[in-house]
Length: 369
Ligand code: T4K
Image (cartoon, rainbow, N blue to C red):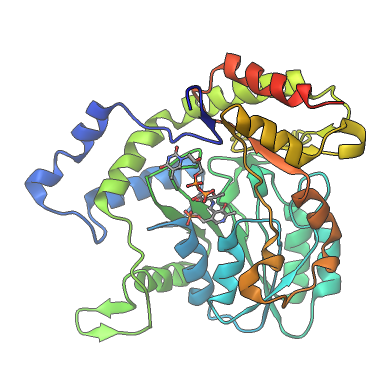
């Protein structure tokens, strides 16, 4: 359809810039396995993200999955069901049991005040998500983890480049896992990273992403293949040069959405946290049907009929997935259920025209009564 607008659109450098970045590979023939582009991107990201240690991987999912494996955990991991499949799958694929904590109705992140009640003698870690780039209640999570000696692994897939109280978001917890997927604020086509505190954990992770190979004649763990290749690292190097501009442009789009939608009854937007330097990753809108006069489904359908691809991130909740065979009790996470049934994430990317934002808002507001 003409004028189709999807929920996001990958940011890309100029073709010449990318060609220039990859041209040295035609001399070196070095395409993957921690080559020069990988090393360069790693160093630049450490600086940009304000973290001491980072390792690059094929994607955000392997970052989560291998971090859990590297920690050699057993038992239960307290997490949120209001997230992408990846978070829960990383836990389950490690033979761990997810224990679902309900979310905060304002930030949609795990409600830290509910964590302690979920702790048992089996609990080994918490895996909160900075969902949509909204930052979790870091202080409370740290207090609880310290008290009960739990590991903290943040799913920071949506939080690239953010700071909390002036500190890089990746510097919190035992580890923070980023996604550099094509749909993210910063992309390396596919890609991911783990920022970590303990260098021993980093060494383990480094082996696990390369089949568990410890040396030319020693394989010390059952690892995977999760190395970022040089083409992806080169895309990352290019996009990193433009990420500030991307975030500034997204900020303008978000401000325009807010100016159009914040006064409408029955529409709930995310509150601003003044301690957070935001990356404007997503623009979630919650529709309360009784006040707004139309359901999420009606808004979604009308947008779709007009070529606008809003998305129901994150519906369904991961604790209701068919693959889990009704194993988890969704009534224990009622706020997450409420939000997931009412939320729409609207199109957002740096070069989305403000006229298009107006068109999207006009369609949404035309659904009202
Ligand atoms: N944790 C959390 C909280 C996550 O949200 C994610 C990923 C992860 C962990 C795991 O990270 P990765 O392993 O993916 O690095 C998308 C993304 O594939 C996924 O990365 C993301 N979260 C999730 C929230 O969204 P889909 O299935 O909705 O993607 P898709 O193909 O429908 O694309 C959405 C829109 O993006 C398209 O309508 C158009 C645009 N697009 C898409 C692609 C693939 C582009 O402009 N260019 C592209 O190349 O999952």
